[in-house]
Length: 131
Image (spheres, rainbow, N blue to C red):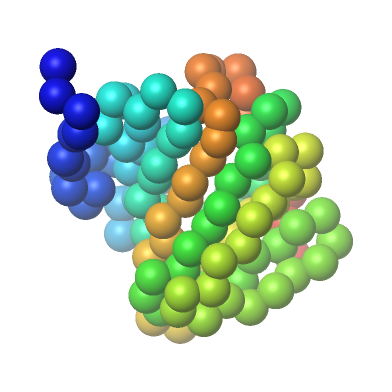
């Protein structure tokens, strides 16, 4: 076994399609397994222009950091929404409900999570953001 792993995040399987989401609106490419991560997780999140994720989520254990790398986005935490510009980094505590929406040109984000958790750590709530 080598001491490193290389993976193009855009080539990781799109988990959004497994949830019935249109890939032109939302792509969620979770790379923790392809990268053989032991203690953390890493995902590529792509939102279409003006697309709001149809769910909010929080975790039991995993803290996340979202880094907007292109476009613009709005993130909502509980009852507060903030605007992100490229290279904005946001840390979100595990138990904070969060959601996201792409700006006029869409958004690409890198999401870092720690500790690495298995299935069952996340709680998703459909329609959480509301209108």
